[in-house]
Amino acid sequence: MFVSENLTVNEENHLCIGGLDTVKLAKEYGTPLYVLDEDLFRKNCQTYKTAIEKYYNGNGLVLYANKALCTLHTCKVAMEEGLGADVVSGGELYTAIKAGFPTDKIYFHGNNKTDEELFMAVSSGVGHIIVDNEYELVRLNDIAKEKGVVQNIMFRIKPGVDAHTHSFIQTGQIDSKFGVALENGEAFEIYEKAHKLSNVNPDGIHCHIGSQIFDVEPFMKAAEIMMNFAGDLKDKLGLMIKKLNLGGGYGIMYTENDDPVPYDEYIKHVADVVKDTAKARGIEIPQILMEPGRSISAPAGITLYTIGGVKDIKNVRKYVSVDGGMGDNPRYILYESEYSGVIANKAGDERTDKVTVAGKCCESGDLLMRDAMLQPSEPGDILAVFATGAYNYSMASNYNRIPRPAMIAVSNGEAKVIVKRETYEDIIKNDVF
Ligand code: LLP
Image (cartoon, rainbow, N blue to C red; front, side, top):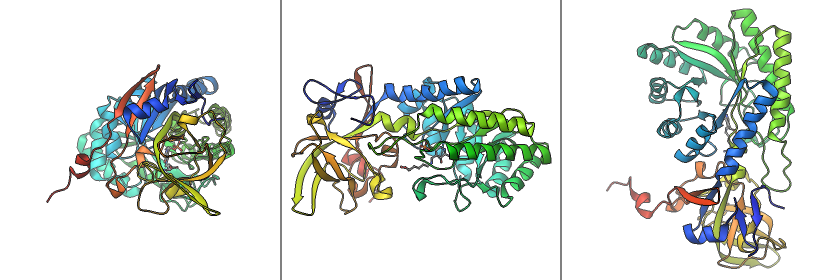
């Protein structure tokens, strides 16, 4: 009935997450409230790790993609689960370092890293920098030279694979701002150049074909193309590729219409393609890296809101307004993303009311759900929106000067604040007059 296994209904007909009553959580911590089921987050980390053990002799590393949800606490949890970290900005890198993440397991991304970010990454000893373009390569080599180190790198490659997802989150095709393309020779040329530079060590290749993808085939196709490229690098440049990073992008269930592939299926199929292509091309089997973000954190998160006004415009639409919106979840306004949820204090009842859930921002497109089925709602009810653990808090804003919600983590039947609720003081703290 619900999109995630950790959501249940108790004898009071209230929604529970990780066994805790969400109505009580809303009362204790206030709304809007992000709630993260830490135990499920951990379990999702383990699913990927176990799959690599099972299908690839453990010769891999799962990097948690922090862009999905990055806090000190989530960094610490990912680290405790033995994952590496994918970071994409100085801010994410800073958070990971502050959380105590071993820097050799950090992979630093970004299509336009600043000198300051490159300097910070090299100085802190990040394991790999995923270089986007030639301009960055040259600057990075200079910075590494200045620091007297040889920086491990890989380039982000556009393998030319078409992933069936929203065009804004599709990245593997040539017309994308990310990385260098295979089909026009750009990728080969940049490896040739890097191979000759003294302070970078290009020992890996990287691609990321998109996000919220439900098919295994595009990943298999990308793996085959990338492995053949590794074969070309060996044949033509004598360059041995030791790491194959296939990015993230595994789709999750937001509503009952989504039909995700079990996460370990991706690795199962991709592992065979990598091994077979390595054999065919006479190259070593590389270490596989993967960068799941959404599939680890999204299903573990829900957001709780308090319902305010209910506006039933006869023969038009029924709007249910909540005390949050695009400030804490901009995914509808950006991608028209669909979400499902329940009235938490009537969770076991049938969802018989077709409603559109509106946020409180001064913006018509500020919706959280459009024409979704919910239990009949009244002012004061608690709305729980499911699968908000990724790309909600991390993309949140203070539009209309609305403070960002708190986040709590629930684990072993206990809740604790991991991100404090912003205050009006926080809102003006950088203003100067
Ligand atoms: N690795 C790289 C290089 C990426 O660019 C991304 C996502 C990931 C890993 C993680 O992908 P995931 O497993 O989370 O799908 N804001 C959008 C998603 C943007 C994804 C950007 N890159 C959304 O809300 O759907």
